[in-house]
Structures are given as structure tokens and as C-alpha cells.
Length: 569
Image (tube, rainbow, N blue to C red):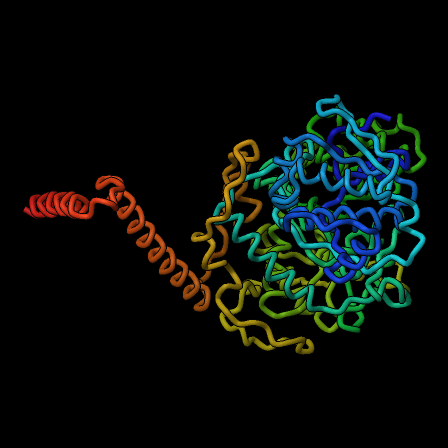
């Protein structure tokens, strides 16, 4: 079977005959890994990088044998393939090391039925089958390393490298702070002891473990497109199953933004949304809701019609109804028809992702409350629901516009079939943004003492970080604008509406002053280093002839002093 050289995330799960791509994030732990290496008679490799890759491929094979029985694993023997992914895999995952490790495991029988493909074979990758004997024993405890948390893909869904900027560093820093809190939190599933113990399970092709809690952000084609949060166990669970999540042993509740993207579009068009936007005569609400997103995301009518036809077929309905559904949707939303099949979806996702980041900054970093995002909804312990709703409304006001009734809804519990709205008939002119005091009391139960420092909003060292440069072929020049902090009304296509302006909170002002101070110090230090390099360049590298070196240096210093004196006159 022909396997594409690159598969978008999750494509292989839809077809049981397809190979799964080699993963690079699984780990066994040092003790288990070294014991397995000894048991299998594998000779230790020469470098730390080689041992890291050996552990990753061995752990991936064990996981695959247990949870993806009979699936072949595809991997590339192309050097360019791995160079492009070095930001995400780590420097050890080079073509030479991967080929060396795979061939070693094939010789020891850990991997079998090895199908080597020559580099350059169009649409074909090498593949192997993890030895089924790996599943004969109990699966050891596996973990997944965090890896790169800010991910950039091109329009085709391929991972691409990028140069770090202050904005990407700040985004990564915020994620690290959030992930630190989540990894210190005990998650369990009521009534499911196996998942609660952190063991991995394959549920409908998705691997789940309550240890899978590290978030990452995925941008699609640029820093203003996509950017949603992914990578955690609760995002792959069904809505019904999520109701059983316990956080530190506490029952949880999920609150979502009601019809968020529809509201955003109507605000952008300066129109009023009346009623449920997903009630379309002749179609179930769930189908109409998904069709709405499909039509908005499509970049043309034909692609929208094809995608809606696929959706209808998936639901057991005739494909020929696609045109009828699109026409009915346009009739229902005539006021915003111009935004249909306009490719606006990724821009809206970027906006709701920035709202989600805001909510987690306040709830998780500031208040210390584990807050689990599912794009436009959040899960928190039940005693924190009022805090969450206030913060979600603040995010809505900051990024979208005026807070209206029913903008936030508590999702139905296991016994209720309908959602319960949290009514807010009054516009909050002083909606909480980021309180001026970190010790602001929680109206609900006090969860835990947060870490109180100004770095909540920004990494003060972001502009000083000098990460290792990526290879030239792995660099894509993209500007990284700061996260938008304006309303939808101010986006392109409409006249700007001035947002409500408030005085900057004291803690935020101090954080900004500290950032500027650090930046000035770093700039001064950078200037000194540059001046020193220039001086060495002018004097030359002649350490053996000390007198000549000193004389040359004195000459240049004298010239510089003369120039300064003349400039002063």
C-alpha cells in the first residue's frame, strides 16, 4: 500500500490498513529502559543522543504492540525529513541515528518485517512491525515527554520550523506555567480505575491516560491562524465521559461559550443574533451546528458543498442534501451571508484560542485552579464555577464585545438533557480583567495558594533568550504579532469601535516597568559585547606579540578619544 511521505495528525486512525507514523515522545524511564536493554541483549550505544532515540523507538514499539495490534509503523530514511522536524523531535532524531537504531532493533528481533524503501520513493516510506511478543508481557508504565509546546504547521498540515521571537517565547512561557500546575494535579475518572491509575488505553483509536495533561498550541499557516490548545486526555473524551473527571478528588463542571463563533461573526458584521443560530428547519441541530462551522471554514462554495456532503454521508443522510442545507443556512443567516465559505474559520479559532489563554492565565496561573480547556469550554472543580464564569465573561468582553445574557452556559450534567444558562441580564461595566491584587478573595472555596509574581503576564527574560538556531532549511520567515487584545469589532471589514479603556493595574504597571528595565540592561550588555568584538576585529588577533598588540590598541583608543572630543566641540 502506498503511504504518503507525510500524514496529517490522525489520518491513519481512520483507516485500519494504514501505517501509523513513528512517534518520538514516548519514554520508559531510566530503570525500565536499562532493564529492557539488558534483557533483550542490546548493546549500549555510543552517545547520549543514540540512547535517547533507542529509548523512544523501543517505547513506541511496546506501546504500538499493546494498543495498536497488527499496525505497521512507518518512518522516513530521508535526511531532509528529520531536519525539518528537529525543533519538535529533538536534535538526536537525525536520519543517521534513527536508521542506526531501527537497524539495531531489527537485528535483535524487536522489530520485524522490515520494509526498507529507498530515499526519494514518491509517496512511500520505510516501515516495520513491532514484534507481537512485546505484547505478551504487561505493558510497563510509559510517559510522554513535553517536547515543543508551540507548533507551527503549513497550509498542508506539515510541521515546519520557525525562528523564535519575543511573542513565541512568551506563549511558550505561559504554557510552561500552566502545564506545571496541571502536572502537579491529581486527575482521575469516577468509575474507571484503570484510567485513574494513569495506564494507557486505546478508546476508538485514541490513546488515553490521565497522565497526558501537557498542553500545546498548534498554529496553522501563520501566527494569526489557529493557535488552539491540544494534547490532553480530556480533549479526546466524549462530552458524557468528561462529566466523570475528578480534579484532586473533586467533582467537576464544564462551562462553555454559547454559540461563540456565530456571536463573533454577528458582532463583526455589526448585526444582532436572534435565537439559536443552529436551528435549521429539516435538519437536526447537531448536524446544522457542524455544517455551520464547515461552511464558515471553507474557502469556496464548491469546497463547502463537498465538505457538507461528507458530513451528511457520515450521518447517514444523502449527499445531495448538501446544497439544500447550505441554502437553508444562508437564509437563516442572511445578515452575515458574506462570511460563508470565506475561510474565516482559522481567524476565529485564533481569537477563541487567545480568549482561552486569557482564562487560563487568570484561573490557573494567578489563582492556582486547574482549568481544563476544550477550545470554547472549560472544566474546573464545581466549587470554582462562579470564578470561571466571571473570568470567561471578562475574556469575552476583552476580545469580542459587550457581555450579553446567556453568553456562558453550564453544560448539562449526567441527569439533565438540556443545558442550563447562567443568565446575566446586566452588562458588567467593571468586569474582572486581571485584579490589581493577587490576594483577591475567591468567592467560591479557596483552592490553593498561587505563586505570586509579576511573571504571570510575561516572561521577563523572553527578549534575552537566544535559543539555538534552527538549520536554514528549517526556518520559515513569519512575523509573530502580539496576541490581539481588541474586540472583534476592530477587526478588518468593519469600522473600529473604541473598546472600554481602564487604568492599568498596579501589578501590571510594575511588571511592564521591570520588563523595560531588564530589556535596557540586556541592550546595554549587548552593545558592550558588540563594541568589544569590534575592538578585537580592529586590533587583530596577535596575542603572541604583546607589545604590538598593546601599541595597536592604544592607537585605536587615542583615535576614538580624539573623535569624541571633536564631536563634543
